[in-house]
Amino acid sequence: MQTTNPSIADELSSPAAEEFSLSEARSIVGEFFTPNPWVYWPDLLLSWTVGIVCFQLVDFPEWITADAAWRWPIRIVAFVISSLLIYRCSLFIHELVHIRAGEFSLFRLVWNTLCGIPFLIPSFVYYTHLDHHRRKHYGTKEDGEYIPLARLPAWQILFYLSQIVFIPALAVIRFGLLTPLTWFSPRLRTWVHQHASSMIMDPTYIRPLPTQKTLRIMRLQEFLTFLFVWFIGLRTVWAGGILFSEPLPATFLLHVYLSGVFIVGINALRTLGAHRWTHLGDSEMTFVEQLLDSVNYPGKPLVGGLWAPIGLRFHALHHVFPTMPYHALAEAHRRLMRDLPANSPYRRCCANSLREVIVTLWQRARENGRTSPGAS
Image (cartoon, rainbow, N blue to C red; front, side, top):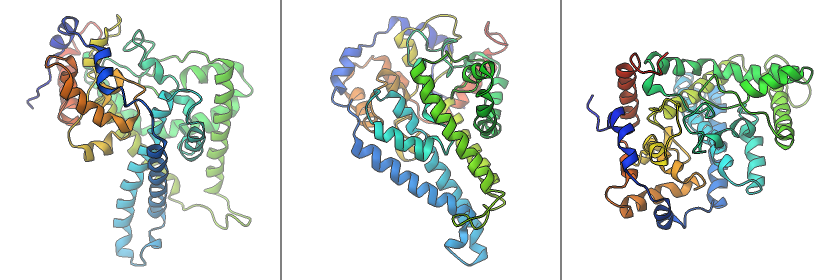
């Protein structure tokens, strides 16, 4: 396949000679840094409501039709819609970590109640994302969201993607089994925090120990998530009382698992296309190098909004201005492309499609992985 992307050698040799004026870019998009609650609230609540209704229709298609011939088509359509909308709701965690502490407090509470705890991703698991945006940490061992996949053997990409079948079950184990055990073992508590409490790519990442304030938040959130896991577990095998006259359908847990795999799988593919993954982590990258290692997808907004919702198709722009709200990114990108100098490195961050970027990543891994000094 022909691509327009530069080679690894080109990307690693040219950025040092280029300049990007952050102040100039900010002057172009300075009006776009205030998150609008009138966008956040309707988006979250409508997406969640439709997503949960469609999720229920997968198990109860008879709510729509008594004709058995239509039930499987309804299940399939409802499964895709519910998974995409739950995925969209889940990715609001990315916005929350970038909104200043003390702001959107009610939104944080509602999101954790509706999404974070039921989807087994309470907001504390993403606090480490901020390290991904620290210039000294990006692409290094302190960045748990970076693996130099373009410089490693191609099988590492397949290994990364293979994890999608295990992550939903591991989340249940993390909160349903490990959480109560940490109440009795300080040593296990430390291990779980460092190795099993972060949404990251690199399985060798060690999360720094928390402050006392953060620890209190984490313990509350993981306790509530523990209760939810056991509540759902009991509901699948037991019924009684006024509220629950019968257990959940026998296929419910399979449905939950397949939804989790679907969602984690889309997010894994999106992540592969978010960066070029060219840095070995042996040195600090310049700002321009970090910029050129990130990707924007300005075309096909409807399709792009499905696999990279909540503004994540403008990932390079997000790395320029991490606190810019998702609803402003499209217009901010348009203005930057209009007003930045013709030789601005920002213009080199655009890709035509996710497929193009992933195919290029695979080709680079095959070409460079065996001979790279960072290969393993």
